[in-house]
Length: 440
Image (cartoon, rainbow, N blue to C red; front, side):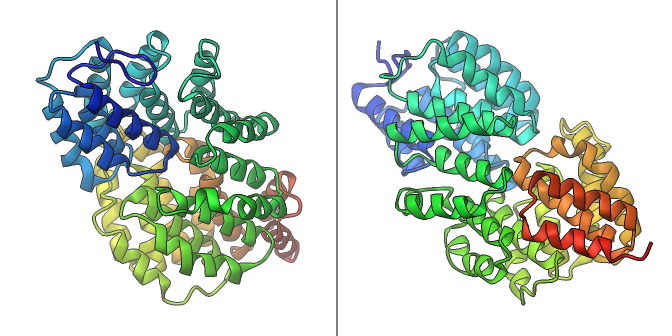
């Protein structure tokens, strides 16, 4: 029986194709390398190699991009008639759920699967990302923690599993352990995306922008090379550090340079551009005509049905470009989803529709309405997925709306709330100063 790098049986493979597959899985886990080409090479070498088809389908499915849905379904149907073992069947079942939009059901399958197959590195990363897409951070930490007890440090993939655990620690607020584990994981895999990403988050959440910029500069050669599929997001984190220091032009220069140069034409990557320009625009920093270009790139990547997180950021681009009518059309699609049998209906109903309504009210200068809507919606904000750092754009907008609306008590409360977490943040201090200037 042919086995992969973690000694798991794989069906339909040869020694040649499993070697290609192992390279592809490593690239997938590192978020560095030509993952899709390597999966395709394994598929071509062994057309009956079921996990090569399924793993490539996961690479597409995790993007939650409408334009990739057909390719995910094609790969599922290619794999479905093939011979497969129990482990591979679980992947197929979980993928079918994701293709139908049922992310919750997919994670249920993978969670039980990883209790039986704790060495499945594709499943570990997929489950973590599916939890991230749903805002369910506890299991990002705990699922990897329970697996680490049976792994040994000399096993292929161990640094990746440790890095995934570290990201779960960070999203659960255990910042010291998250940073320590990330730094240790980098010793085993210096090119890996996850530790660079996690330490950036740690320094963002703990208000250490100078340390963050120093970390990124020192490690730039390891995360900014062409093979890194998600480097636009790391550049985005770097821009946030500049904003935290009041260096808005430096942040905008990163947008004009490496962020635009490295973003990919899928929603999960395009969110970086929207989120950065929205932050700068809301605090009054001139971003020129950049919104028009961002809006063009969003075409076809968020449709009001496939995920609130992408819809929220696409709406930012529409409003930034002055296309409020497009946002109204988006809201119509989102409301339809909210009242449908779509598995994401509750998320659209409880969070997605109110959030975009709040942004639209903010854009139109109806600041009291924006505050009323966003104050309520943010209690359900976790539902849309993404990290704490990414979702902060909503609280940022809410605080600005309260200040512009002259809502002194609300503005002061929100400003102090932000400063309690990051007291040295330049924007947070400006929020407080402006809130204090509102007539009592």
